[in-house]
Structures are given as structure tokens and as C-alpha cells.
Length: 488
Ligand code: ADP
Ligand code: GLC
Image (tube, rainbow, N blue to C red; front, side, top):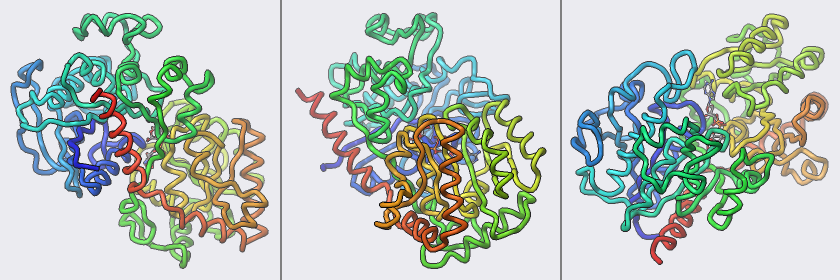
């Protein structure tokens, strides 16, 4: 494909700021697109934390059309890449302690609608070449609700770039009080049920779903699931209406950041041919979490946001069985207070079996991936999921629910898949205590009784290749389709 100018609009990007998988995608996909000879530039809010981590920022633009004088655009590079990044510096909105969407106590910022509206308006100034950058994108690639106003507002420009909207998670919609139609000065065509109105309020995500030239989500299975009532979060009707524009593209992973053979966050390295380093990582992880350093005790890991989506309640429900079966479990996560408290309580009730760290810790996430024998991901829904893919590469056998990207990336250790040496993990269907425990039991019995089969499952997983190159090529096809839509 010819070189395109692509503006990648995201609310987080690793390593500048991260709350979940979107940051990993924004840290990896633009680089892969550059390798496909695309001129891709990221635009993201200038959060305090991101400003601290960004290197060599310069001023790119002041006095942008349609924006308050206090808003500026800073320019730098995404660390360790050649990808240009623009940071939307509106100090009143972004220069504060806390996360990108919530305050240090985990409450959503009260002015999120204003924050992501100013972000969108700045992206539009860049997209329409009115930001003084002398650069015009052909494609504006938006991600999740925080960028939903971009396709919606761009639609009014007769000569505009093509727009893509990627759904990373349909559960987060950016739903605000209807007074914001006025407060944000949104044009009349965005009002009403054919616009951004949703259940009497204002929905940012609808901006992407209605107005983008092409829509995708991050796995083929989730793309089909969100068109059903069960997974549609009230938007399945709209998604069915736009089904001819909706595709699924599986995320890639960045094997430069996630490779056990040279991961700088690990003390002991390993690969599919030599797993000794993995055993050392296990011992170290047990020590760090004050678990008995027994190599024969199966060690389960879980890293993730502690929210309903991730099936944390299911994990809590199998704790007694894990303990009875002399299994160890290490959990790293943060999220709902209730899940945090229940997990911490389980670690107090069963010291030596259950260990929990509440918080966000990149190094620890890598160490758990490297040291655990199995990885739990019993998600109720999972648009793609990256941790199970990292687990595969780290020889940590994933136990997952058969949904979304988990369904598309893990091959169940059924009899025939074991025989054909294609199995990479364990899957179960229903989000129930019984089914999660049955899948875990299946894994434990192979781990304990059939070491050769276990080793085969590990090495098959480690050899899977989910690098970004393939996904980037699919995105190029998607851009092509979007460009075709605006050209006739
Ligand atoms: P989601 O985007 O739904 O949170 P993914 O599996 O796509 O789920 O990506 C989650 C990313 O965030 C992974 O890179 C994972 O390691 C990371 N992560 C989640 N919680 C934590 C945590 N508490 N500490 C460190 N990394 C975390
Ligand atoms: C979302 C999803 C997750 C996906 C990630 C990156 O946060 O919950 O499944 O992997 O975005 O696309």
C-alpha cells in the first residue's frame, strides 16, 4: 500500500501512561505501521504522568482554531520508537495527579466530558490541518469512547480524512448527562437518537459507531459477539445496522517488550528450548510473595483490572478448591474496592497459598507471567485480551473462558488437540464456578500426572506468533476500505 498519513488518536500509550491493553496497542501498532512505510503520528492528552515520562518535548502549535488560548500542542517521540507523538496540553484538564480517567481514589473525573471534548477538538484541528503543523492525515484512527467525538465532528467537513473507530471495549461508552450537548457546544446534527443521544444522555462512543467510515474491534469473535444482545451493551442494534462496516482484527503483541529470552524486567531468561530460567523465576516469585518455595506446587497467576469483566468473582469462588489441592495463586491487580478487599481477605485466610498485590506494577506483571505455571483469565467477555498471549510466550499455560479474543488465541487441550500437538491452554464455556474449576482441574491433572504432555503444551504455546506485523497489514486493508468509502 502507498504511504498514508495516519493520525492515531488514543487516550493512553505505553510507556507514557497505561491502565490496560489499549496502551499496549497504542505502543505497538503505530510502530508496526511505520514498518509498513506509513507516516503515523499519535495524539494523546498531556497527562501529568505522560509529560514526566516523555523525552525532549517541543512546542508544536499554539492558537489552534476552535480551541482556547490555553491549549497547546507539544511534540515528541514515543520513547524507544521513531513514532511522533503530539500531546494535547490543556493544563486545566490534564495536568493533575491521578489516572487518565479517574482521580487517585478511583472516581471518574467529574469533567471527563469536557476533557475528552477538548482532546477531540484538538485532534480535529490536526486532522483538518488547522493546527499549524503543515501536515494533513489521510486517515484518522480513533480508539474507544475517549475519541468518539472525532469522527462525529469530522463528519461535517466536506473534504476530510477517512475515519476508523476501533472498539477496544464496548462496556465503556463515555455516557454523560444530556446537558453536555449544550455545554460542549455540539452541533445540532449530533442531537437526537440518530445522533449521540443514548438513554436520554450523551454517548461519546456512538460518535465512533455512527460516523466512522469503518469500525473494527480487536478480535473476530468479539466482532460477532457484540452484535448480540448479550454482549452488545445496548448498542447491538446500531452495530447490526452498520455490520457492513464492522470487522474484527486480532491485536498483536510487542515481542520486544514481552520476550522471556531477553526481558529486562526478569532476572532469569528462558526460551522454548531451555526452561530452567522459568523454574528460577518461579522460585523467585514464590519468595517475593512469601509462598513456600516448592517447585512441585502448581503456581497460578492473574494480572489484570479487578472488574466484573475479568471474572474475579469466579476466581474467588474456586479459592477453597485451590487450597485443598495445594495450589498457589498470585494475583496482581487493582480496580473495584470489593474485589480488592475479598482477594486480600483470601490471602489472609490462606497464607502460603494465596498472595495478592493490589496496585499497578509493570515489572511485577512480567515476573508473574514468567514465574507462574498457569494463568487465569476467566473473563465474562474479552474483546481481545493481551495477557493470555503474553502467557503463551512465557510458557505459562492460560486457563480461559471461550469468549472474544480468548477464543481466538488459545487452543484447548482436548484429547485430539493434545494428540495433534496443537493444544496451548484450557478453555471453558459458561462463566460458572463449576466450569472454571473443571478446566483448572484438567490443567492440574496434566501438570501433575503427564509431564511430557505438559511440556508439549508449554512449548507449542511459546512458539505461537502474534506479532504486530500481521495485524498491521489487516489495518492497512481497513484503511483502504475507509478511503474507498469517502472517495465516492
Ligand atoms: P484490559 O485492556 O481489558 O485491561 P488486556 O489483557 O488487553 O486487558 O491488557 C491488560 C494490560 O494491562 C496488560 O499489559 C497487563 O499486563 C496490564 N495490567 C493490567 N493490570 C495490571 C497491574 N495491576 N499491574 C501491571 N500491569 C497490569
Ligand atoms: C480492552 C479490552 C481487552 C483488549 C484491550 C486492547 O481494554 O478489555 O480485551 O485486549 O482493550 O485492545
